[in-house]
Image 1: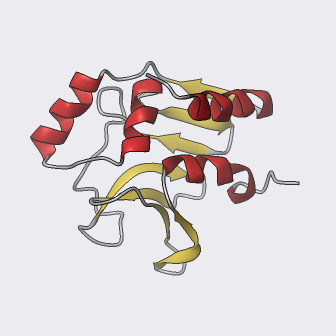
Image 2 (image 1 turned 30 degrees about the vertical axis):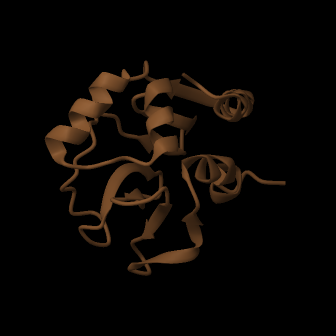
Length: 141
């Protein structure tokens, strides 16, 4: 089920530019992926996966999200992360990976150039990250 909060975020996205959202994964597909790869995704990221199992936002240069069914599929062993405490769930057009922690709700951006996660690029949850994409992509007022 998609919450009103997520519906509002998606509605705002659709007003800003071209989006390419894949069909959502089922709760069963997400649970199978988590079991097979011994991970537990943040709750709000799971809600996103039920809405869109991967896709691209703010085309042509924006954000790519990975899914559990549609390619590109999340690679829990992707080496493009700070350490094993993180999973790469997407990528900015700059190439910097979007990370979720293996525990908790936190979402972060790994800044390749600096070799670290910047304090202003750590989000309490996936929806906070989505709400900040305008600023992150330089589209804010």
